[in-house]
Image (cartoon, rainbow, N blue to C red; front, side, top):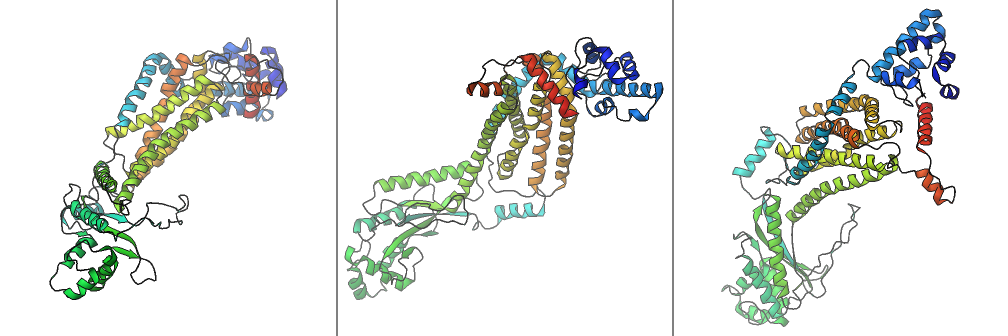
Length: 552
């Protein structure tokens, strides 16, 4: 093989291949493994470039497969014809789609470059307009499905008992999470607030005042559904049916809060024993109501499950701001209260999902930069590739905005997957461009890269596109949305790789070894060896020989 690559010119071709080589030259074909000099025009005539190996059929024919089985001039003529046809097909001599597309892209390269820049700008703007849905209920089935209709009817006409949001305010505990975030089975332990004191008279009145003030807040549902043990105890102390002598003895003669500090715990225990109202007070284990560890009150929020994320965030901020102001004015011992609700966890999950979607896009771009720098080792091409990946992401995001999508749970999961599949085709083309001969023009290198990568990339996109179409027959919305995302990703990736990226490379692609990062030279220089950078021709020869050996 090495011997074949070193020979030059028609004589060498005749010596290597025999009579069929002259017939191949007659139809305008030269063996172009390492063609130089006079052979180069013939290679360009059929679309094959110097140092650029042919694809499957031509490689099979040029490798003399089956030549010993064919004898005489008939065999030579047949073999020469096969070579000519295969080379013309691969090189675009018969008008392959890749050739036609390459010519069209070259003719419209400047408008396509401007369209590429506009696509990034407009797509970026539209993508930033994507917001969370007004209804945070996750719809798993399409409209008209029995399950979807039942859920909608239940929310609109039936009782809202299952959609209420209870908000709890706690005293006596600290808002800590000691569990392992990376281990779902590791849950937090309760941390007691050692400074919590409820027995002081001013502290009793403060908690009671919190209960009464909450009823007048705009973010609280002003119904009778609330839970404040001190409010009920305050009413109980004024009841006429109680044995007054016993109450006076245990509660220090109080007919309402506050109870004297020395008698408060005895009075609270007497209240719980009389009414059974112990679900809001938490005592030390194995203790007969002597040590009060924590106290909780609960109120209904105005919002209901399914309202927009913005409304839930606004409600959370109102609760949080109001309680912070109360803690700021609280007496010592009850100034570390905090509020919590199950729906706040749901809200936090939404926020985390949305943040993860944008973060995934940023992380993907950063990883793409690193991988492009290490594999392409060319600054301009790596830059173009990264811009093309960004264009794919924002273009798909802009289309999703135009068709009315929101950043719901299902959409965020699909978009996270989209980000991972948006880099392949672009980087494949960039790598193909880098592997073309350095002594060719940027237009010719762009065409050669397009010729090599068109078939495998289109094949990969076609299979993925066809598989995604099958998902539209599924009942679950997630699969149809996932299929939409994948189809858009394949279409935009092909457009960016074969139209916009090719046009950018034709206009401003690197020529020679411009922008090349010579990794081996850098490592050799750091190691104290020779500091002379390799010549462009040396790099071209090394790559050409390496590709020839690999391909054959």
